[in-house]
Figure 1 (cartoon, helix red, strand yellow):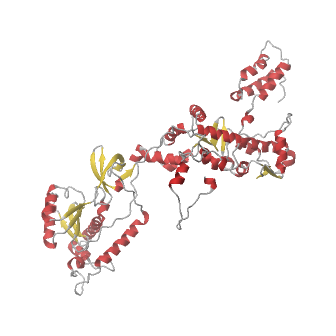
Figure 2 (cartoon, rainbow, N blue to C red):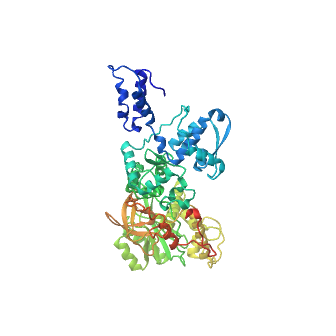
Figure 3 (tube, one colour):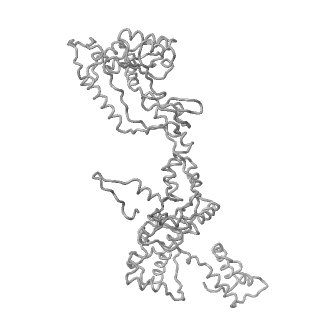
Length: 596
């Protein structure tokens, strides 16, 4: 820029200098002589004092002296291309450099580079460049290295391209940016990282301090912008601000993946994904509105040793009429009884069961849900009197007694279709009882009564069916059902007494805090839990583990101990001594040196 020729040109220059004021220290004192000449009482006569102030303003911007090593190397490439534009433009050019990160950054997409490098890469867009890495000991680069250190004082003007990038951080306020700067200066790990970024990364990961080894994979992307460490366009957050940033990232209470996607647009720190997983899983609000857990693998009920050993019972409604269904686990034989209107209580259920028991005998086990008919005092006294064991399913989880639920579905469908077609429902039930269970198993009537029932089909009544392998066939059938069910399910881990959990309300599907009191013996996946309103029995599907929340880091790594292989506080050393990975033959697996 030439010296101003009149007041108007000087005002233009001072306006430009004021625009760059945030980057020029003591600008007002430097430009004081120039402002004097703008006063109306003074005549515009340019002299040496004004020229000295004019040159001092132009030299005041010295940002390039504080560039990181990778930025200086890229600036050298830009300078060389623009300085020799006449010879390079329109021709393929190979650039040799002893700074290996330039090779990978030049191959990446432009948007993945830090803002300052983006500006330099844009200035290189007119040229057909190929950057290749050559070690510094190469004789060709020795000359360039020497000339770069012994450069002349005179400067040659270079015409700049009219392309710029203006980078802003809309996610954070100016106050937050200042906090990041301040906390970065007090974070020993990040200060060590700033030093190594400014001076240049070593050629081997072994030369990197232990605390900075996790950053080795990102070394080409890390830069310094206005005192803030950046990974690409993402701000590296100090440890003392990570919990606060986690709260901002999770402000909308989105899931872990969405929160990670949002974080990847603006911030970065070590173990960020792990911290996001913890805060999303431990968030009380998110726990309350979590969806129902996925199904678990099927636990088949053990096949009874004989007919009428174990039975199941349940109530169901059809056309405003209540029915009682009793079915044998061994034979699958159903008994259906209509309950008189207004008499749905324990005494009616007990009377019907007594009638069936008088015909078929008293079973060993009676399975049911936890409805009031089966949890009353009268029902327990009835069980004690007749000498059978009561087994109940988990509350609000009918799958734990899935056999009777399946039987209810089948019987309801048969009765509804019989009514629709005006067919005798008793004939329909007779057909169900006399139909073979599958190709390898006879009908429920044959399994229970050892004979075929005469129904509405002409048939020849034969001798009793041989039942020597019935249990084996039932087990095979049950195993096929389990394999089909378990194709797309996964087991949930067992819970321990005193463990903090969330319990799901089946009516609202929302989750609330609770703790495990004990596991109910002899009943799989059933737990007694303590809640603010009292004790409940729930199936494992209604209980969700609560992980611990991520804590703010209050300590920093000691750089003096980071390179000490004998440091007892080094987690890598403790892992190496406490556990060894071996192959099947017993050979100890050693990790590669670059993971050391």
